[in-house]
Image (cartoon, rainbow, N blue to C red; front, side):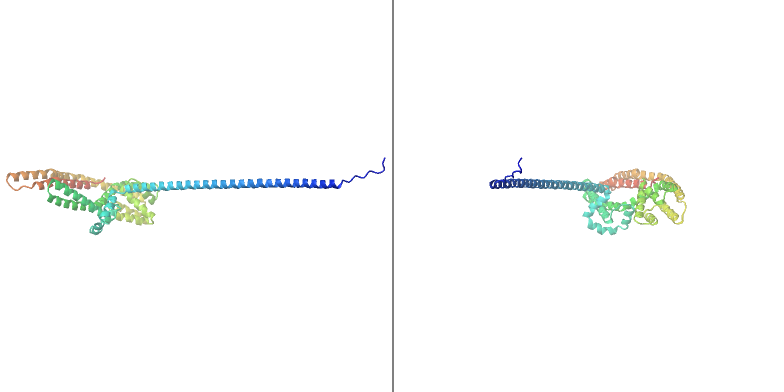
Length: 378
């Protein structure tokens, strides 16, 4: 057994040298591989970042395009809506224009042509504005005068042409002048006649309106709500007048002042008596429903008395109409025959044509109109 182990032999210099070189090469390769991996990772990261940036850019552009498309759709929708609203406004304007009375539209048309003569002649027709207001004709006095002049010119020219072709030029000019003046007078009388027709219609429906109001008040409904109910009912001109009272009250006018304005506006004895009773009851108190019921009975009794008087006077009116329509033309024919047989002067044929074609029909038409206006509206 040896006494001591042999000492390990130390590698030589060459071995150590090449070992150091090999280790350095291995470390360099490992470092290079790591660097290569880091570079590859960096390149991949940069590539992913670039791809992500490109993707973000594409997404942003797509979103921008989508936003612009939505904005364009909104603009188109708003434009279509605006166009639709304009069309609807135009349609409603046309409907409102068509709802206007024909007299108002004609007055606007004639006023553009006859503005100066209408403004000069409006002072000649006293009280025209009040008559238009009472007749509920929402036309300015100047425009209504233009309408009167325009219609008179049309009727006068038409009369001249017709008489010129049928009779003679001199009578045509005279007939045209007469037709012009007659149409002008009729135009001036028309607002007053329409106002009176409204008053007659109001008198006719007053008993029914008073019973309507008495029923509403008896059931516990207030006076403003009762007048609103009457304005929505089918009482013609009276519903329109109560509607104007309600509009005045909504504008801030008191009930008493609004009723007083209607009292000045409507020349109806029954309505004025009713307004006075309502105002007195509002000031002093009382059972307004019972008072209106009594007024309704009184108004109905007055209408029945007027109907009886009209029936009694109708016989005399019928005899007058028969005299004008049958006796006068026969008397003229007999006078012509007698004067012709005796060799006396005869009426010119033109004068007879005017009498039989214009004068007698006009008299008969006016007579029928008088009888119709005297008829009580019950």
